Image (cartoon, rainbow, N blue to C red; front, side):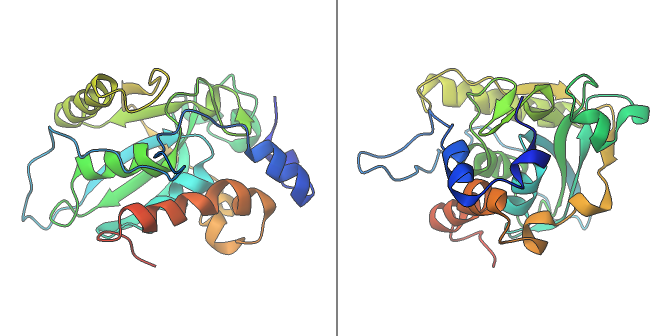
Length: 227
């Protein structure tokens, strides 16, 4: 298992090599990353003043957090853990891959500005490779699996329908393995994990694994991208 804590210390050349362990992303004939279609089924819009929450796991939470912090309509993003017990929601335990937790992010968003389905469109388009099982890029282990933790039946319906839509469209060259699971609890990660990409933009892991995701967000979703 390649542990991210060890990867931080790798020289740039090694980080580039490890970062190349991804595949099956949808690309055009020219090699450009492709924007996935919007969900055919989405949560209805609302004009209420109440924010909603999406819990998403897609590998290292640093990069997923960084992507959604650049999405208009998102109020706040918190890195954390979901899928296991409260007593094991600590990085030193989660990193061994036997706690049931997945590194996750809590996305608090304004449904009047962006829908749950649009968040999932961003998630699948730029935040992860949903065809990788119990890993994501250079990181391996069950804690790096991809999961959509739904908070209510409406979110479950939208998430399941979107995965079925992408599967039918053969959007990826391998099966989507992202799970759709009920949310039991979300536990915030340690303070040093919060806003990690923003605070450490020159970290080799961030440069080669996470910064490109934000670049793709800006390229594919200019209408909802924010600096």
